[in-house]
Image (cartoon, rainbow, N blue to C red; front, side, top):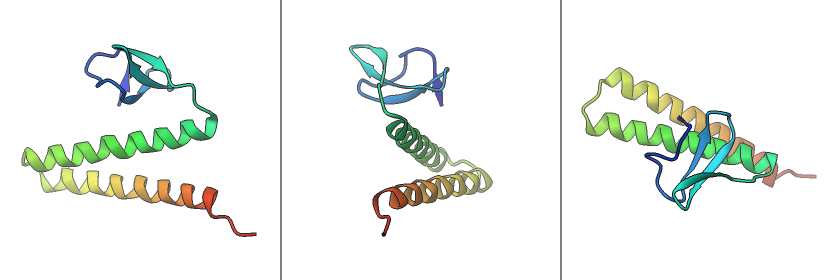
Length: 95
C-alpha cells in the first residue's frame, strides 16, 4: 500500500510513499525514515508482511471467499519465507 499523504496513517507507523521511499508518521505528517539501503529493504519487507497479514484478517472477519483467502495466505507465506531467508543469510553466514 502506497501513501501520498499522512491521512489514515497512525502516528509512528511506517509506510511506503508514492515515490517508493519509506516514511514514518511523526507529529501528524509523514517524514522520511532516513534508513540505510539495508534497513530500507528490511522495513519494506516487514511492511509487506504487515499489510498482507492485515488483509488476511480482513477477509476472515468479513467472510471473504475461500479463493481470496487462499491467495492472500499464499502471498503472506511467500513474503514471510523470503524475509526470513534474507535475514538468516545476513545474520548467520558461516565461514
